[in-house]
Length: 49
Image (cartoon, rainbow, N blue to C red; front, top):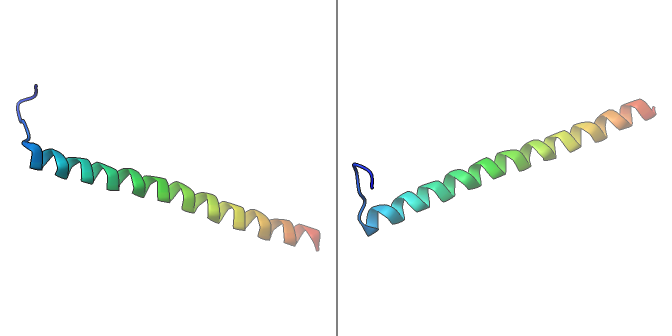
């Protein structure tokens, strides 16, 4: 065990914090993919003209 031990309430708070952090990272990746797809579509339309 580490130097600092959490009670049940503290463990729940830490778990919630980490869940929010992982979801935020996932959303960023999804957002980048969306932006990239839109950019590629726009680029394709320009080259078609």
